[in-house]
Image (cartoon, rainbow, N blue to C red; front, side, top):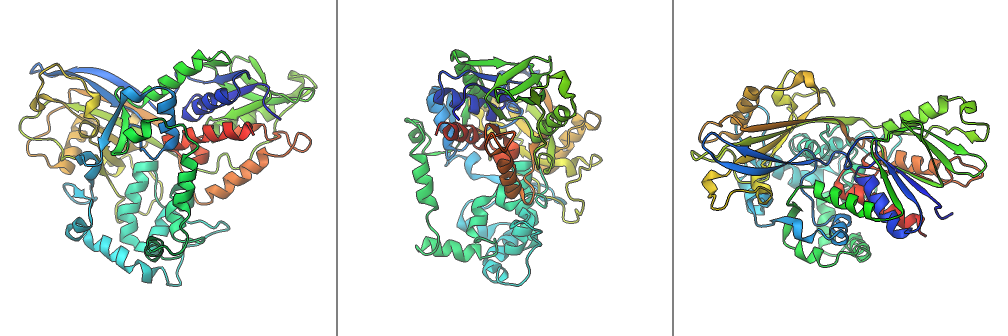
Length: 537
């Protein structure tokens, strides 16, 4: 049944993308977006601040409290750049730039940073070459052994188990845990490899146990499964990319002059321009029920205002939706009238853990005595070798909490504005630190942060006190797709399907968002896009 009216719950990227693409597919259908906070964008938060040091140097610096860079292969985002007319505000990091080529690890128990290899030759000179070469060269033989991780009843395993099986425990700890820290702020021993790294799982065959090295070699020679590129190219043809994709051909990553929130603001402006779309901020969701006479959903907000609609898109977090449904089920039917029924609970809404992150933006004054950090994108921190507490946050140790550091002034310096004539010796340095956990009672001091950075960066001159510091406590901001996530989400979609006769949801209530189909910006936007395509068929 085509929609008569649509309600979108949540104004993060998934909700905004859903509202935008649905409004394009159904230009005459009323669409209402409800957001519990007083702003849209969810965890995307860009801020421009003016800074001045005691030497009179000044600048307008762009800070990010959430996502900051986007990859050109995220077709759903590139399409939005084209459709929203954001071409002129795009800034890119070329593939040849140090921020694209140079990435580092800080290995616990050491001082300084370890550069990651960025070429085949650099692998042989890397300080961690024994781990890298031993893992890769031994993989075809290791993958043929009889040992394999426990699968439970899912054809899945943790990212750590997967890398340990293929490349060895040292490789899994150094490379795998660092990558999981950087993307999910989570322990790699909790992350599902099938959900989080599907292309890697695909390279290891249907059960994840074939040799990745041998399969890569076979595909390079034209043998074995090789249809992924064709599928990707076919899919890309359906996106309206205009000339934007060509402009990003040589880019490693890109963003916008006023930060990632420029995308959110452009979506908001476009939605407000459309006559069939209504955006209601500061409207949290309290309850969901169904009118048995019309078959419409009845969504009550925190002010007990009731919104009737034929179709609902929920992009709020899965635990939040669980709480709404629990509250809805506990209400007396008489309070709504005898023609309303309350919803059944949906499966797997609270199956996955989530990560809380403390994001700290630091701006340092110009340092003529030497750069604070090496040229590059930043560094990640693997877990310690003796860390046996899976998913725990050690608030007593700042070093144990550190997930990674982004060298923003190297990667995105074009976002910062300086007075005319400012030379490179008078530019500020901005860094972003990501720490596990988000607790006001466990905030590190400025002195502790400087001591930690000095140990990791080993600068030529002492790091001066920052001229500006901003802290964001992002609680439960990243959902962790744990082992079995894909199967659980398939069961969730099955529960939402059905017909009006045999299902409360009837295929007219969609659940999406970072906790369902991926945490990246392209993942969230893609889900809204695909939903609009599905409902318009």
